[in-house]
Image 1 (cartoon, helix red, strand yellow):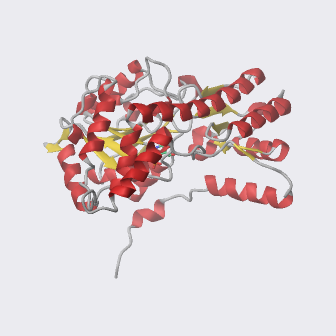
Image 2: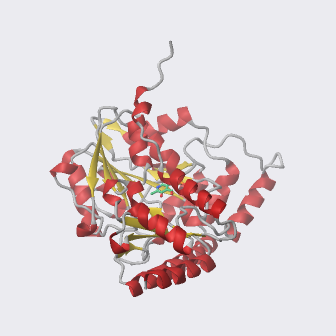
Image 3: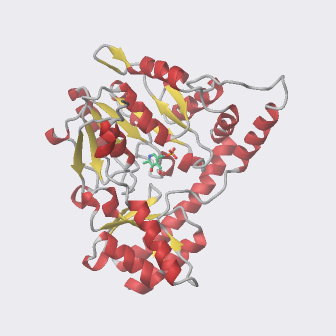
Length: 394
Ligand code: PLP
């Protein structure tokens, strides 16, 4: 008899976005004439930039001619894209060889797949509140998870101590959902801690392009010693609006070894077995992101989201509501006012001003009493949401 993997029965239902969808649906059924202002979405709203669209069209044309047609692509990524990504890191002083960069179909895929590199007996540290996939992917693998709560007292950026000892350490900076970003000193402490304990850090840099303060690190590899203890997972989803186009990348330095095994070589072996690479057309589109023209255009789009953030932060400042994030991240993490819990505040905003956000409790127990606004909505809706918030809570 086939035995399904037992660990799947340890998964908790992911009720957060389901509950939000149910509540907003019920509200609209009762109030069909009302418009909702959706400040909860983690998906982008702006289309792909011109440079990417042109590259995609041209790659489609390439596929129509025998001379320029591409079949299977190299499993770990096309050389032209791996080199473009390595050069992107180079601009920030991080020297990578092209074969330390692996092209992926996105960070979600990689965050799950990369766990193939680690034994089931390894423990995984998740700093909460957290992007839910970290916990679920490890529960599926049957791994023990150590939950490390963060809070306002440490700006949602906890430092390592004995309670954080784990074989695999997830760090997400800029953070989803809190928008908090580790500075160099803080990140150095995690790198040193991982090296001292023989842990591997999985550094989720999905929001690095949103960092605007010069001194903040975009990549863990800006820190000395990180090449011996870290894997970086990144995505073009939020950087360049690729949520529906799908492309990301993972960096595994050649120095990264544990118990005499080289993780870069292991990942090559894994990819060449389990994938046939990302499509030529998508990789051409992705490479256009890293051209001067592409960089300029994606930052124009990011500016739109940043202005949304400013608009929401101005409203919160006026109201005297505590928040973090927003400046170097597309998320704003706020304390629910008037002593409300996360879901009470959700209902209050939905019913009173038709603004939809994300209750912090859905990202881990220590998110209770907090709330997340996303800045990925349209500027018009964001302005209106900020105005409504100010009127309701002012
Ligand atoms: N990591 C974080 C922290 C995210 O918030 C997201 C998506 O919202 C992802 C990874 C997944 O990104 P992708 O679209 O590349 O799968």
